[in-house]
Amino acid sequence: LLAAWLSTRGKTLTEADGVDLAGFLADRAGAGIKARSSARLISALRQFYGWLITHAELATDPTRDLLPPKLPRPLPKPI
Image (tube, rainbow, N blue to C red; front, side, top):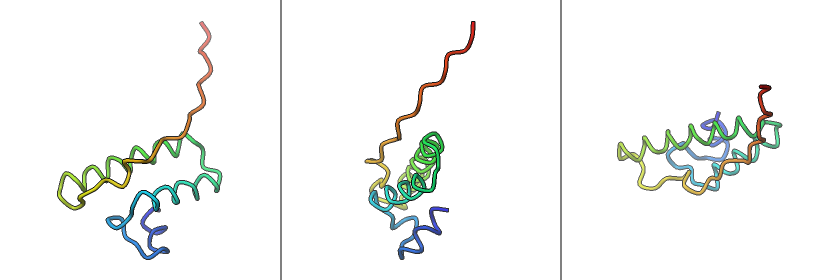
């Protein structure tokens, strides 16, 4: 999904920067994607880009400045 979105902007996954990733998340939020799904996506992106850095495919982490969305607090469970 991210790769297709980036390709419309002439970039690949390894060429993406923080601005690209923030734009992708903003587009998803505008499409009605819930905050919890965005938080999971940010976590997955951090793991993916962390793997690329560990394996010397990237020098800098484009996810370092991404902040997860505020999540609503769950309702308490009845006693």
